[in-house]
Image (cartoon, rainbow, N blue to C red; front, side, top):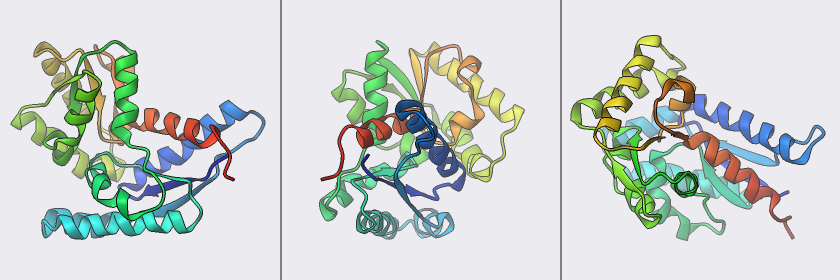
Length: 234
C-alpha cells in the first residue's frame, strides 16, 4: 500500500475526520485490522489565517502549504492529500515544486457528480472556494455547471465556518440555515450540492438535504484509499 501524505490542521476538526475515514475505508477494503499507511503534516491554522485574512498575503499562505507538501514528500509519501478545499487553489503553483502528485479534491468530487448524472451543483465553502475559479473550472471539464450562493448566502456560510465549524461547534440553528440556503439554491437550478468545506459534512447529513449532496471529505478519502492500494511502492 502506498503511503498517503496528509496535509492537515486546516482545521484539526476535518483532519481528525480524514484520519478516521482513511483508516475505516482501508479496513473495509483490505479486511482484518488493516489501517492506512500515512504521514501527517499539520499546518498551524492560526498562522495560515494570519497570512490569508489579516495580512492578505497569498504568497506566505502558499509557502506554508508548499513546506507541508515537501515535508510529507521527505517522509516517504507517494502522493499528497490536503484536508481542506480552499487550499487547493495553490496546487497549480505548488505541484511543480515537489516530486509527488496531489490528489485534487475537486477532481474526486467531479467524478462522483458526473457518475450521479447531476449536471448543475451548488457550491458551499469558504469565500475563497465559492468565489474562486478552481472548482467551476474543474467541474466544467466534466460537463458540470456550478451555481454559486449570492452575497448574503456566502457571508452566512463563510462566517459560520470560521466562527463555529472549525471550532467543533455544530448548532441546530446553523444546520437549519444551511438547509434553507441549499433549498434556495435548488430553486435557482442546482440539482445537487457540493459540501465544499471539509467541516460541512459534520454539520449536515444527507437526509437533511432535499437534493443529492456530495461530501468532499468522503469522496476525497475514498479516492485516496483507492490510489493508495492501486499499486505498491517499488
